[in-house]
Image (cartoon, rainbow, N blue to C red; front, side, top):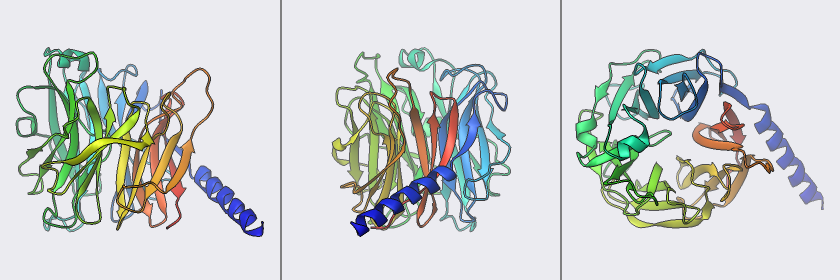
Length: 372
């Protein structure tokens, strides 16, 4: 009984600590934006955190006058800087921030930040119908996000002519740090091909990569499951890639997973993970250390609710630990939580940057997790 009581108190203390570290980073109606959406976050060797979002100037819509903005934190997410605009595409759309820190380029021993993003001239529906286009770009920073390079358009390298809709992962991208493909920057994507289908089978998840620190890019193979959409990826302990995608079809309310042992060129074991329920929304994977991988999504098959952080100690084969980040009983079916991204703050703490309260805020919460 005593052991149970001590364990119960420890659980309450950890939950209280996590709640105490919660901070609103982006809020609707502030900073010149009607709404903020699609969070992405990375951490630097110095401990600095960089949080990106889409500042949707006029309304909450995916398409419109949407800029990509940045806030930074130097105290583990307790406080955040004023926001700066990193990408402004005029009155059109800039979207899908996919940052990653290249820590293996010998020219930049302190690391070089890549921010991949998309632009669009029509709504996603219109682009799927062949009436507009989506392009792919990146910017870099070598001074921890204070200044950024001119934009580089890589559309012709990473998007086939027959693809219509296109989107980077909404959340951080990744770099392989071991094995044959050490140094490879890998960005999960989704695209549409052919006429729009009612069951969304025109969508497919895939990726692109660079082996020369952004000089050239190549298209990775798709995972082979029609309807796979917004994707995320993480390195495993042996240098493989674990891939995780949204099932846009919605016929199975689970995450789609796959693995690659050749740096994302091809995929095996693609299928549905029934241990990862999902309401057809975005999720985020992150390699922590060794065989330890974290995953966050809305662990609910009905609503965007019950945002849950899971920890795997066997490279994502099983998910031993589960931590509820936020979830309430909402009979109106409101989107309590939605898109999210995760970053390792230190050896025992994960930072979760996520949308909440029906898209009114993007908040940061520090979550302590126990080692196995």
